[in-house]
Image (cartoon, rainbow over all chains, first blue to last red; front, side, top):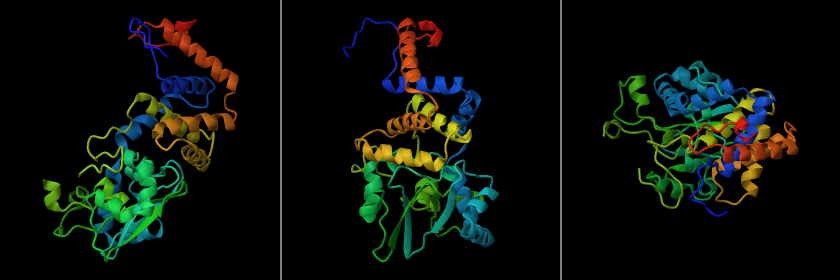
Length: 206
Length: 111
């Protein structure tokens, strides 16, 4: 298609045209409502995000009974804090230790624990991450500046539409006596996917 | 955090937009909205999206696959028929041509 600089009418990309076509027809037929669509975008842009997951992790670090409930039924324990999934998926926590580091991938598409982490980052959805997280996790981690000792094993969890994983990172040293709120500030999104570690108080302050 | 060069499109935690363009947000909301209204199970959606990603070129941007998968599931579930879709596309194209740049684009503009 030649680009005509003299035109003064409106233009859309193919993607815009496709979306507008489907959206206008689905609205007319009552399969979706505009108000509901607005709420969905608003929610995922502003309200749901990794801060939800950080609260779960901070509570798990400070409240052994809560941690036990997370181990037994993570979906229910996470719902206690008001975070519930829209897709009916089951949540499971995987706990990092000095011996075992967990990281999460979805090799098929991009299944992700939306209710606690919001929408997935771009790299999580990329083909290289989806394949390399499985084939060479230690190398991928080092590219995220996470260098684990050889004695730490790496376990990779492949998410599905039915099962999503939340990594509980190790609690950083020097955080005795921290409140849940202070601890939550140390929990990054990547640390809950397993491509990062929780921040030390010094790193968080930097 | 450094941005590893070997993972294209990798971005750091801060300042990353959730959606790069408005149509991505619209496509995302349509899928979640259809699911909420019971048009399909989430597992059905995940299957269609997985297939779309698997069968498409590796470098396809994520929301392009998402949108193709939406078109597929809309036709699988017979929510809208092909004729209506191509007719509506032409109507929007006519509306675009009839709408001066910068004005709101309404279907009526093309009629």
